[in-house]
Amino acid sequence: MGHLAGRTIAWVLFFTLVLGGMMVIAAQPTKIGVIVVDVQGDFTKLKNGSLAVDGTDEAYIKAVEENTKKLKEAGFPIYATQDWHPKNHVSFFTNHQGKKAFEVIKLHKPDRDQVLWPPHCVQNTPGAEILLDKTLFKAIVKKGSDPHYDSYSGFMDDGGKKTDMDKILKTEKINKVVVYGIATDYCVKATALDAVAAGYKVIMIKNLSRGVAPETSQKAIEEMKAKGIVILDDLDLQKIKAS
Ligand code: VGL
Ligand code: ZN
Image (cartoon, rainbow, N blue to C red; front, top):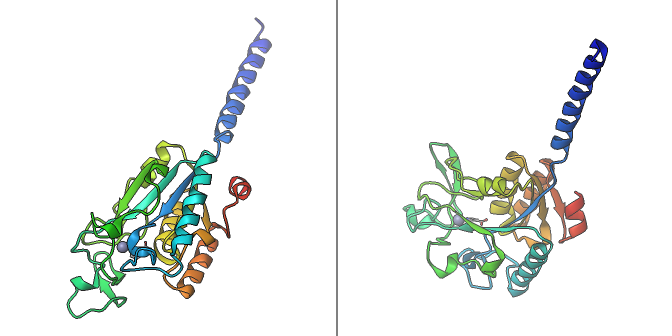
């Protein structure tokens, strides 16, 4: 073989490998997962929950269940988060002498504001139960189990301790998540923002979510939009696949 032919073969081989490598990277397919946030008795009017959020009636729960079924039938793996507090949890006003529900206190290490809530979602109580058909879920990620830290996010608590959520999604090669549930202005927002921070594309569905208060919910929507989260009014499989 001539010197020139050898060099030509070497270059062809080189470009084939480079192009092939680029195609492998570009071909990473989009895989969509769904995170249904904290649809639990204590957050609902339906169950007379201790921290019942407006608009969480039977029709809402039914809409969440039916739309989640559609997403499962479309082939997307479905996950749930579950607020799961011990009785002595730092977020309960009853664990702070002289404090009332919805007061805000300062906590330290790390410095943070803590809203004091009525006791809710206490481990192994009816109020902590997820109100949807459990067979919908590939996994249920519990959060807020450490008495010293709150955990609005399904990905990590206020002390920075990660849940299994990211590991589970990465194992499934999921790179895009659809998020909705309760509450728009707390756990839905925190979970959606942490998903973006962890590198996922995020779609939040407004009408399948309910907020503690209208003003904070509107602010939460704006914050999510500002971080690149796509806000859809309703479930729309075409838009979910396209965005
Ligand atoms: C939540 C307040 C306290 C939520 C959880 O699910 O949004 N809100 N714990
Ligand atoms: Zn909680």
